[in-house]
Length: 188
Image 1 (spheres, rainbow, N blue to C red):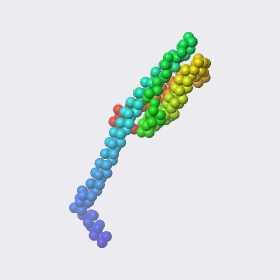
Image 2: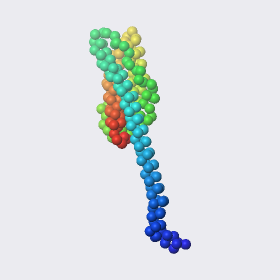
Image 3: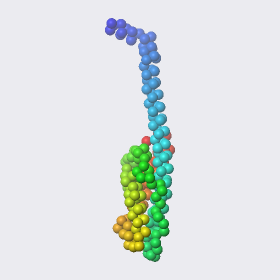
Image 4: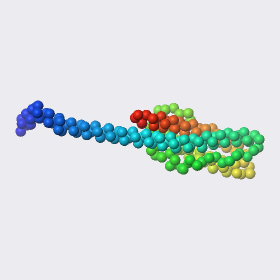
């Protein structure tokens, strides 16, 4: 029996049949499956990166206005003027603002890269601190009768301007990483 199998395998016609009818379709199927999944994964990564850029753009706009207002308040304190308006917060919707997919993209993209301020892997933490803690504290301080003392404390001891600037820079770095990833042929 073994001799028959060896003779059949060594026959050139049988080899052509084995390769052409059995091995080649399996190899082509595997390659097509891998290529299809790779293209689908790259497309998904590109879409997640584009969505992340849009989310970061909205956050950056509000952070820039907030940093400007905090800085202007330092100047206004010298003249005894009340800070003008509340800090913007419309883009913040809790921890869902930076979805898990976007966070995963950011974790992949920021690995081994130098950032200007806070690590990008902590983006949810620092955005939460800014929007959920700093802004309500600021609103409460500016609406109190002793607003000058409270605001001075937040600006000097609390380092609100530096913290807000750090969150802004971190978000700009995240946006930059996502934007460069979305334009790659093979996004990470």
